[in-house]
Image (tube, rainbow, N blue to C red; front, side):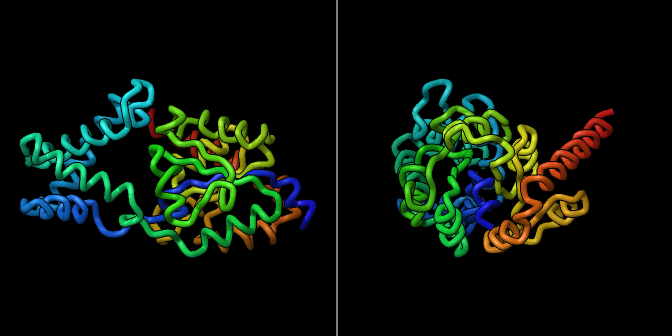
Amino acid sequence: MARSLRKLQCITVDVTGTLLAYKGQLGDYYCMAAKSIGLPCPDYERMHKGFKVAYTNMNKRFPCFGWSAKMDSREWWRTCVKESFIQAGYEYDDPTFQKVFDRIYAAFGSTAPYILFPDVVPFLRWARSKGIVIGILSNSDSRYRDVILPALGLHQGSEWDFGVFSGTDGLEKPDPRMYELALKRAGNIPVANALHIGDSLEKDYLPAVSIGMQALLLDRFNTVEAREWKKKGTVVLQNLGAVQQWIIQHEDQYLSGLITKASSIHVQLKNQDQRAAV
């Protein structure tokens, strides 16, 4: 076992869906913000659709929370939230909107909307106790790094070693450069000695294996998509406890077998996409 763990030098992990989940619905927090200043609660469905449109538009215009445009991330979110309300059919005067926004921004900068999965801290501490470097990869702004993760009990130097965040590094998944930067920050660890864990085939698994890393998919919610991934031979596990056991049980085959399988799956999926585009 020790020989295997020396080979596995770095694990990078996704955040949302892997380490934590959202509590409630988006509309809950928008509703609470509106009601706190005496406004009626916005319609949940309209608000959800409005946010999706606004977020997509903002990410196209100012990707990575405005990083390349040197836009303050709070201003990025202010513009996104205002557009969300407009898309949903709600327009407030500036002083009223500012009050609503301040409450929404504060809520999502706290632990209120998030729940940490109970297997996270034990897994991360187990891996670090074996000398494995832990990196956080997230399409998020600096609040995950500076506020939210520490408030949830995930501290740099205790549960994780380094992070790559789109709002501070100007890259976002599925860009393979985000994974390359992670390995550089881990100490220029060879790709074959690194494992990525996430819950998205497109944003986590495929970009990781495309640069030669190994990857596992987490399916905490027993999704239909995950069953399809399994049919293609992807390693899909339900929680981080299972990941720990999987690493231990597959110590001998770990480095030689998983990367070959992952590369094969990547080629199969790429060929499927090419055929679908014809």
